[in-house]
Length: 108
Length: 244
Image 1 (cartoon, chains in turn yellow, brown):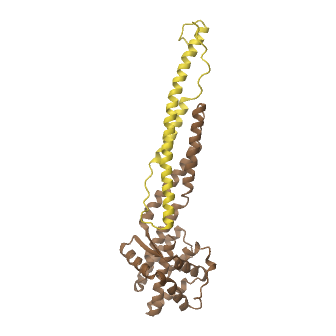
Image 2 (cartoon, chains in turn blue, cyan):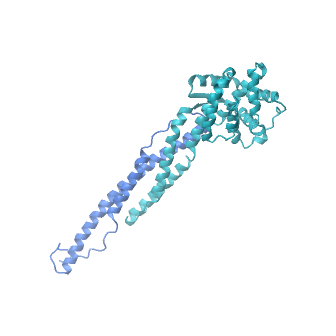
Image 3 (cartoon, chains in turn green, blue):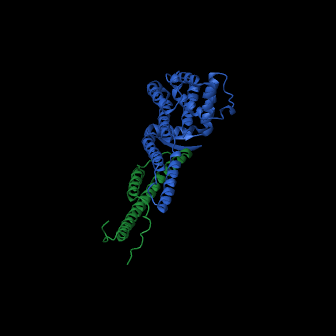
């Protein structure tokens, strides 16, 4: 029974994806580890405005840290899946080429 | 009139942490924004690029909200300490002993954006008043709108200040007492008009030296002037309080 053509290799670079995920975690770490700023004794309209800006900054840091970690996890998951797909494609490609060369499967 | 509280130590502690927050946000914004999604397959590349751009945008906006905040906190901490020193000037008999401390504060405040000419006045016990007036004057764009009728001579300036500052006198006095007791935590009563008026007086008319003379005058046991200058001190504390 002839082995069907494997089609194009699944595009992408799992190693680059994992490296990007690692970089994202590197940016997330300091954003998620900032110390708190206590200005509880500063009560005035200006004080409240400044504290709101600081809180906004801290909240954003925490939120973006979570977003970056989440994206990093997605990238690793996708990299794993892509790697499996590319390995599977390599097996099918090998079988297809070996068949064309009349060689036993798995020789390439 | 409203009462605000100023904690110089807390402001000093917060300043480097806010600087750290700002630096971290800005650094992450730049780093994340420069990330390369090459090597990612189509669907995940689009998703990743969108998430990265969104993250960089959020970080940039958050950092923009904190530009200059750390330096501002340090400046306010310095002013809060100056207010504490000024409040102690209200005990006129202690003025000579406080002068050295005020000069030191003038030097320190030089690094917090207080105008250079503060140093010129630091040799007098009226320095604290000038800090308040100058500091406030810098931030009062509508100064020229206020006309003051108490300009003809030293006595009239001092009396004018007395009238202006009396509006918040009792609350200010309470703030001074509490501030003197607790040291770091200095509640200050703020009468906005009072601080504004004092700032305008100093900015436009350079009355600091006059006030210094007034303090000397007070120490000469001229009771009316002593009252006026004491109220002037309260006005200075008001003026600093107005910055918060």
